[in-house]
Amino acid sequence: MTWKLRSDEKSTLTQVQVPIFSDQSRWGTVEIGFSDLVDESKWLPVKSSFLLVILFVALSGFVAYLVFLKRTMRELNPDAVIPERVRSALDTLAEGLLIIGQDGYIVFSNAVFAHKMGVSPAEMVGKDIADFDWQVDVETGDSSELPWNIVLGGHPVSGSTAVVLKTDLVEKYKLSVNVSLIAASAGKVRGVMITFDDITKIEQRNEELRRTLGKLEQSKREILRQNQEFYLSADIGVSVFPSDGEDTEKLLQKASVALRAPHPAARSQIDEEL
Image (cartoon, rainbow, N blue to C red; front, side, top):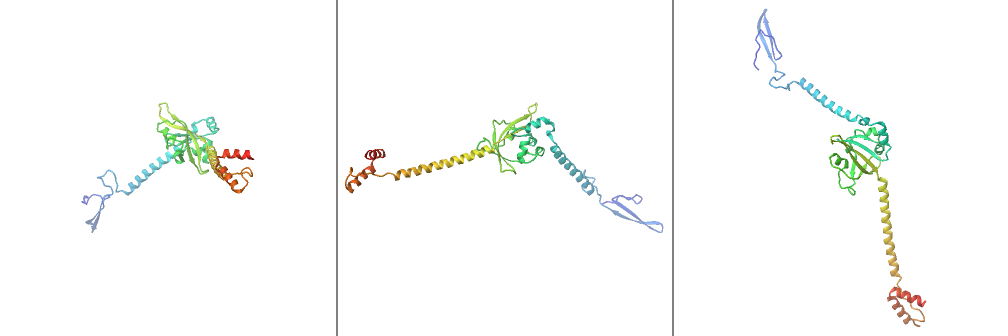
């Protein structure tokens, strides 16, 4: 570091000079130099710890404010724009109903669907629909993608789709889902309206019916098998004394012939002789 101060100049932050006097006269000077806290060659004073703290606090506060503002806007009740009479009418539906925005967050939930989730309709608002445990019934559906994601992607969905929803209250619900697009005047997608028809009990009854039919089919096969064993064990030859013979040898011969004879003929012969 180069010393720049003259003896008659005042000390600075980086250069300090202390005069030494002897008999009321200046005998010498003690010169003390310090490194500059701010590097003037750079636009950002990275060497200043105080400025770094201010910069860090400002950036952290800005990010925290953005997160808080986003969360606050999401938690605000967007269904307040829906008239009370409309919400009451939607709550009387037997089907569950959700309205979600284009970002996938729930804007409105009627009481039926909220009851299935074990919460109030107000608690459903602001939740991401993807946070729930959905699964498309691939046995009845043409696609493994959830129907509202298809509609939000700009593709139509015809008819209903069977979807399985697992919750903490019951093991799972099986729902028939219909999705309607909500678009702005310019055709821009604003969200979708989803209706859920609970077919869980119907599917349970169908499954019980299928199990019952399976048991009946199994019983039918068992009865047919037992009848076949009965018919096989009932094939016997019959001879009548004394018309078929008067001794044992002739009676056994006649019985053997009757045993080998076709069943209808043998049965008719027996009926006639008896």
